[in-house]
Length: 83
Image 1 (tube, rainbow, N blue to C red):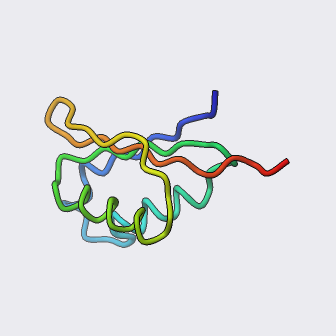
Image 2 (tube, helix red, strand yellow):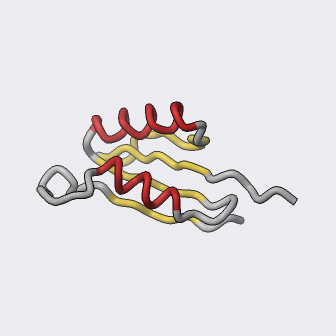
């Protein structure tokens, strides 16, 4: 089973430093191994909207999009290695 990297954006609205929430998602996704997964969690609805739009625009597979205990859970999956 592919490894899952967790990215918690809970404190992103309080942080005034860069990078922003979506840039953190982009950077974490870029570091995934082939077939790897990135689980993004945030209680902020705008983060989920941004991640959904970014994944659609960039052809990134979104395998999970669900509400869970006060936050939104989204799982992005990197393409598997070509053999």
